[in-house]
Each structure stands twice: as C-alpha cells, then as structure tokens.
Length: 112
Length: 112
Image (cartoon, rainbow over all chains, first blue to last red; front, side):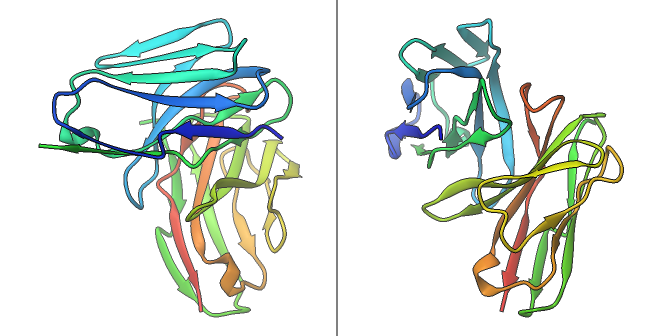
C-alpha cells in the first residue's frame, strides 16, 4: 500500500516568507497528485491538481511540482499570509486502485 | 455550484442506535467514497463506489455499510455504532476515481 510522508510535520513562519512543503511516496507509480488544505475541523479544499501528463501546476501564489521518478512532490507558497495557516495534504492517487492515500499532513502557521 | 453535501454536520448518538449519514453530489460523478479522519492517523478510506450498485471495501470497512442506488447519493450506515467509531467523516466524489476529488464539509460523529 502506498505510504505518503509529509515533511515537515509542522512549520511556523512569519508573514511574507516563501516556503516549501514536501511529500514523498513509497510507490512512484502515481497517476496524479492533488494538493489540499484543511482548516481545523473543516473539510478539504482542493488547491492544485497535477494531472498524469503534467509535472507542475500553478495557481496564484502556489506552485506544485511532481517528480514521479523519485516519488516526490513539493508545494511552494510565495509571500505567505496568515490566511495560509492550515494543514496541507498531498494524497497520492496510484496507477492501480481507486483511493487516495493520505499522509499525516503538514501543519502550517503563518504569524503576522 | 459543484459540491458534495453531507448531513448532518454534527451528530451525537448512543451505542447501538442505528444511524445514517447522507452524502450527495451534483457533478454527475461516477465515483464516490467515504473516509474517516482520526488524530494521528490521517484519513482512511471506509468504502467506495465506482458506479450505481457497485461498492467495495476500503481500508477500514468494519462496522459500516453503504449503498449506491442512485448516482448522486452514497449514504454511510452504522447499524450498531460503537464509541470507537467516534470520528470526523468525509464523503468525496470524483469523475472516475482517478481525476480530481471534491470533498464534503465533514460530519463529526460522537458515539457515547
């Protein structure tokens, strides 16, 4: 079963900093990759979807990349804001199977 | 607005009293699934459905039932809830289980 590791587990930065969140997967046979954010006790909000034929996606201050050969993905957040504070999740969607495999997430706190 | 709707948002019940959590999507997605989220364990899949009348077990199906009589609805049934089913539950849908997922807002269930 695919295992997802997210590093760091928690991160606290001052407002305005650029930051990188990392995901790694035990099985590099990833179909596509979707980054989510989750506010405490709330649902998952989709941020970016990297399709099977793509290597990266950008939306505003967010940029996500996927390297299937190494089984790694990164989420880059530029000019962080307090509103970015949330838990970030990068479940993998493998070539086989029909489930998202979740790691434990990265808890981000951006302080004013 | 494209969305997945879960009800109720919050539920407190007693051990053994049957309950149903409803899930509905308005995107004509073939695939729907249920996850539970517990502290320190991340999100784990309970059941999924590839289409009407087609359901299959996820990683933690014990104590749960599902049905898919219509494409838009995928209720989660707890026939005899126990305290270890206290959790935050999420319903999700996807066009085929391989494309981007949309999650509901969650149902926080407490079994006493």
